[in-house]
Length: 135
Image (tube, rainbow, N blue to C red; front, top):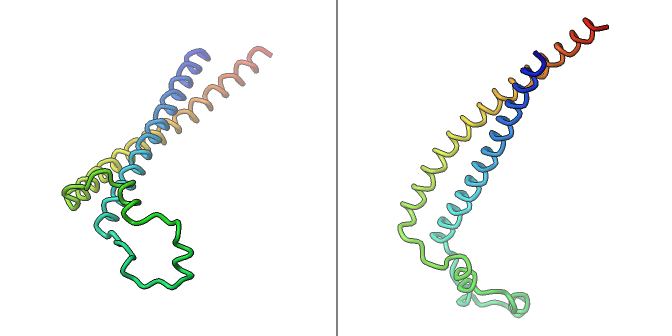
């Protein structure tokens, strides 16, 4: 009996590890989608150059070696994004689907964790009963 409990516990622990690994993957994608969405929105709200602003000498000294908005934009956007509103909608739809999937995986992980705890309790009770019967 202890062997079947040990096997069940090992199986549950494996399932739990897999659920946690999948949750980590989901959360990585969510962060990446959010970052992409932020970039698309930033492209819409591009601040532009400050060259037209009359800067005082102190400000010019501070900004002397600062990268220009153009240099920064070229580093971020290697190509101009096409269809930004559609892209944001598509990202939002993907995020919604991914959040739904995350909720299902989280619920499953919680169930597996509860099963691990239950199996560990059964294994402990079986071990104690075995010791009492052979004492």
